[in-house]
Length: 450
Image (cartoon, rainbow, N blue to C red):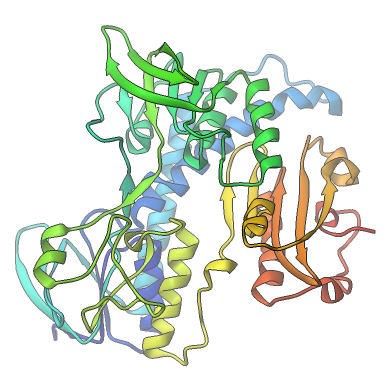
């Protein structure tokens, strides 16, 4: 079989997977190299396993609502081992889905290490140590990302990152979570719903500091109601293992104090996976955020591209997927598929969920925009009330007639945001949205005002 391809992709996470599949379906002879597991971080250490566990904790927490609906469930309990089996099954299904879609598209799947030798050559080394040189006019780096740690910090048996947490087989009695952004509040939600005593510390003034302020306030109240002790404006000075747990030294507004727990979970974000040796050898430009690319995902070296988390920016699976599709279409299609950063929705899978597209009020103000805010509450929606969904809201921002941002907080926010994503991607305004007919009674009616 020929070792010459139209496209070689290194990394089979969401971006690399989407790129390879779309390119192959456009007729390009495509190879993809993956050194670990098909599906990458999202499938094995990120989106899928965390959401599988959050589904379990939400169903367990929602049992408390059943009596209000006239349903007796007795004394609820949970089996964390069974929850882990559900997590593992969802990971297997997702990974198999990635493999199946690549196979059906005709992509040459190569397990092992991919090393770029030149702008036209990649050395593929299979798991047995056999090496071959593959050639292509187009080589794409999709190395992904990994959990970030503070300088001088290392993971251990009790000081975990998100990867380590997902390997736990037994829940600790209590845990310190460092970082109150997306990953931190998702794990805080999961643990608190399962009865773990959680202490959450965040350096900035609010949890979810980059989301709408109404979101931060409501989620703070909901997590506190679950028993989470939240410390904002709090800096971690040091953390270390003790004989029976961990101890964190922190400072809050000039006051030093200690926090102790069985374990600590470090959730301060993710960083691009950068092979410095390869980048320096090839002369590919990069900075502290990741590999530098232009609007067409080209590096400074002709023939070499990069997509997804390895380029920095907002590290979201669906963003990487759209970038992959857009690059495949630019190289082997008609170029009609694009990825606009302003059209990428973001979701926090806390309970309640948070979903946003476009600008927040704070961001609009910083851009000098005077926006009109339209807000609807879940409390006014009959389906939200009927299904005991609790608190939630939809906030839309308009610059004149045009919708420039929307935030949804509440049950099913992750699904509801898709409609508003379409509106923003197509520059729709009040006139177009006024023609929107939504079936009644549905939760979707919270998106419109009477």
